[in-house]
Length: 212
Image 1: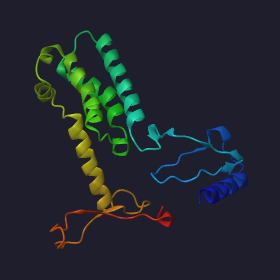
Image 2: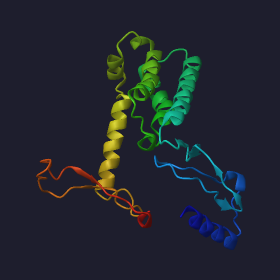
Image 3: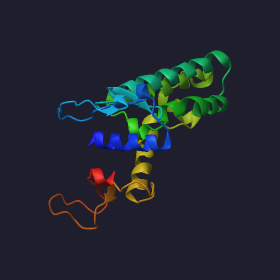
Image 4: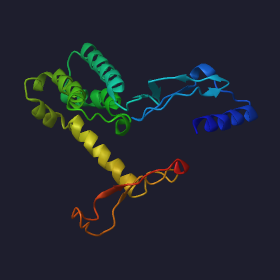
């Protein structure tokens, strides 16, 4: 199937004289089923990869977020360090403005895709904000929860949960995009005799290759 798609892409590129760079063409196999790898071709043999970045999100063949998480935490910590060295005296309003504009985007961009699910990964993301909030001298000796209340900041875990709920609602209600198949919807308003669940439960729709 993949080779058929590649042949179609190659035909399009040759028609419009917009050839892809062969060194930038790679493929990744995702899934638990062990399948013999066949050589895929488009101009030349396409290289296999296990980790790749697409639209600033690092994805590996196991669909974990480890590499992406490490990269973003490192970047966020570096920016926190720059803020600490640049601003000798920080009050709460200035810190909040700097943190939300310069640091949080690195921890939240596309996090519905890379979604940390291990406790240690969730804590690693939270620790960036936990350390950063100690930069404000007036509240550095308070507990993390008290510092957040003073700064009027939610935890990263709350932000992640809220973002997931917003995206889930948009997808299930058909307000996400008109060009994407519905993959989640609300079940019919009836009680499931097997589970006693109500119509507010979510149903995941199986997607076939023809629907993609």
